[in-house]
Every structure is written in structure tokens, then in C-alpha cells.
Image (cartoon, rainbow over all chains, first blue to last red; front, side):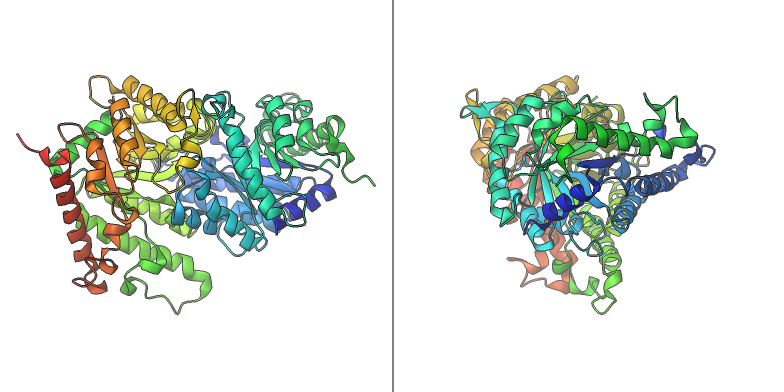
Length: 315
Length: 315
């Protein structure tokens, strides 16, 4: 089992890039030429925005598919548009799979019993991306409801060679509010981490990593390093690089000596590079796709220079 | 502010029923005559199931609109079908609003910063159900990511006279796994409860209850009673009645002396009453709508008899 991480690590080695590009489209930041519907009637706004999101994400997929192993659509920005956004989320996931990318759907789902089963069945296509409408290889999952609520996701992940990333230590400024409350001598998130590591170990079989991973923010380097040590069988999805302030050095401890063990996300810093330093001056809106490529290549080089990921692909 | 709870309490008083009917459609439990697509091609299965869910939910809305103040669609079962399910979720929410019902969308969303804003903007229509594609009066929200991640939902709720219910103590068997870890002398969920009560107090204004409520399961009566005492400004959404084992007596402590303070959910026990005891013998599939009505009336009577909700509407 654990084929999701096996497939992902293979793709990471091939691309020599432990990088996932976050697909977080936003109406107010899209290149203006994709937004040629300003004058349209209000009632069609969501449909037109959804069409623009599709064009935008399809182009990003084309640009990054040769460079990185995976993309991570953020469900919220699609759902904000209503059903037409949901339709585009599905088509973007499918397009990414057809382009050879793996898809981590960042929907942070979580519910009890048969409800969790419904989310798992709906999102986790796993190895066969035609199996479900939402063609995810992996899904982010929220653990608040309890360890029993992770089980339906784990079972579906195993059945379908898919994976899940459970929220452990998130990257937001207030993450400590509930996650760092100390119970039985260790912070709350370390209890979640222990349950996740157990699931990872149980699903690892002969592989180094299990089908159950963890979301661990780049913005808390010490916690990231401690968790790497405490969770040897758990693959990490690391948000918070770039726009949120996390650096390659902050993330270095997430990797093992081979340069494996984590995949680092960047969303705004890549997809909206055209309107951000240092790319804004050189590129601008008309060459936004070139800015995406430059930002992606720079991130890969940054991680290769400052983390063990530089050893990927070496003999 | 806090107009969501003001509107909800008005509806609860009018109907004399602190009851929300959960809309949790499932292909394998729908009355067979709604599922006349067994022979169809596999590729259209999801679309046909979605159409059946729409017919099923529309009929339930017609039956329960005179009896209860609100419905609670469970997003997972719609999303499981892909974009066609999402389309039906939106149409069911709109239809419920048009029928005069309030809508609590049970999607358990939660994310950081601008991502949380996108969920809030997308789902919380509030008083004007034409404002967003997902026409919810209120949304369930997961607190794991931290207190700061609740803020975007609170702000949008206030702007739109909408509300949120934050997961505090859930109804599943493993709820204690993470929620009961004791930090600083009290269980984890009591820390979440304190933050939620603060937000409820801050948004209450002149009203008894704020715009921020809490999900507290009927399956843990002692915790429910303790939380009622600790959270005087917080309205409770109570799952776990009926099929999950919670009884009216278990829930009694959720209400104040006026019979206000909570709304109790039943999903399977109402919508699939036709194939469950004690309704199965009398009704059966052909009279499934009559079974929905009977189960709803019985639940209202049960709560009136065994909880302070019996005082609703009395002079």
C-alpha cells in the first residue's frame, strides 16, 4: 500500500523538485486580460469568473507540468463562486491529472462516520483519476472531530492507492491558539501527530512512508524539525513558503538525508508572480505565464540550494 | 447584530419546534421510486443520482416547511456526486429559503486568512438568500486551525446577518480522542468553548445570543449540560438525536427556562423514517413523505414533553 507516496516520491525524484504549486485563483489578482467580463451583467459574474479561473489554471498546469510533480487546488476559491466554481475545480483537477501531475486537493474536509466516507469516496480518486468526479490523489483532512473520523479516509486511501494529509501544525499566525495547548506534557498538535504517525506506520508496509501524511507549516521551523523526528513514517505537506514568510532554510529539517519526506507548497508567490517582487518589473501581466515559470524554477533552485532536496536525483 | 439567532429564535417560537431536519441523501436509502435509473449507463450515474437527491430534498422541504424552522443539508453527500451534486446542494438550499425555512449548511469548513474569507463569502448569504450561490443562513465551522481563523467567518456573519456554529463537542464515538485531552486543568474542547463564548458575547449586542454558536452533540449529556452553563450567550446546534442514540432527556439541559438556546438535528431518523422502526410497518416506501411528516411531528412532541422546549409559545 502507501502507493500514493510511492508515486509522489517517484515524481519528486524525476522532477528533482519537492514542490507543489497551489492553485488559488482570485478574481482581484488574475491577469487583467483573463478578466474580460467586467461589463457583464451581475447575475453571470460567478460563471464568467469560473471560466476565467479555468483558463488561468489550465495555463498554469501547462507551464508547471514539466517542472513539478504536483498541484494543490484550494477548494475555497472555487467554491466561493458556487456550483460553476465547483465544476471548474473538477475540470482543473482532471486536466492536471491528464497533464501527468499529481493532485492534492486542499479542501480540509472532516466529519463523522458515514459522512467522512462520503467525502473520502467523492474526492479520493487515487491512482485512477477517472474513478471520481474530483480526481484527487490526496486530500487534506481536519482531525478535530477525533481519531475515529480519520479512519474512513485512511481506508478509502488504501483501497484506491490515494493519500491524505492531516492538519497537524498549520502555518497561520494564530495556529498556537488551540494547537499548542499543553496536555499530558506535550502540545495538543503533538497528540494529533502521534495518531497520524501511527496511521502512517500502519499503512507503510515495505515503504518508507505511509499513505497518511501531515500538514506542517513552514512558518514554525522548530516545530517542523521536532515533528520530522517524531514522525519518521509521515510525509509532510508544507505550506507557508514564500508569501507567508517561510524560507528554504526554515524547511530544511522537513527532509531526510535523501532529500525526501516533504513536499513544499507555494501558491500566490508562483501563480501571481507577475504582480509581485522580484518578478513584477521584468514580467508584468502580459507575460504572467513566464513569471509563473521563473518563480517555479527559482523556488526549486532555492530548495535545492538550502535543503537536502539538492540531493534528489544524485547517484 | 446577531440577527441570525434572532431570526432563528423567532422561527423556533412560531413553529414551537427547536428542530432542524438534516438533509443527508444517500443513494442506497432513497425510496426506490426516486431511483428509477438503475439501468442507465455508468457515466451518467452521478447526474441521475443528483437529480434524485433534488427531487427527494424538494419533497422533504415541502413536507417539513410548515413544521420546523430550519433544514441542515450535509454537504458531503452532495459533494460525493461531484459538480452535479454541488449544483443540487445549491438548488436545495435556495428552495428551502424560498419555502421560508432557514438553512444551516453543514460543511464544517475551516481554513486560514483569505481562504477562510472565501468560504465565508461563498456560503454565508445571511438574510438575503439571493446574495450568494450557496444560500446559507449559517455554516458549521471547524476550529482546529486556531481562533484567528474563526474571525473571517464572524465578520462576514455580522455583515450579512448570518451565523456560524463552531464544532466544540461532536457526537461521534471517538470525539474524546482529541477533544478531551486536558490542558491547563480542563479538556481541550472547553478551551474552544471559551473562545466561542467570547465571540458569542461580542456579537450579541442587545440580544440574548450572539451570531456565533456551537455544535454540541446530544450523545454526551453531561458535557452538554456543563457547556450550557459555561456558554450563556452561545446558541447550540445539537446533532446526535435519534439514530445516533441521543434522547430528548439527554438534550434537556441545552435549553434555557424559556425553551430557547438550542436547535436539535435529526437526519436519517426523519428523512429515511419510511424504512426504520417504528414507522416502517405503517408507511413503507410508497408513503415515505407521510413517514417524514410523522417522524418530524413525533420528534417535536418528544422534545416538548421532555425538555423546556415545551414552554415555547406559551404566554
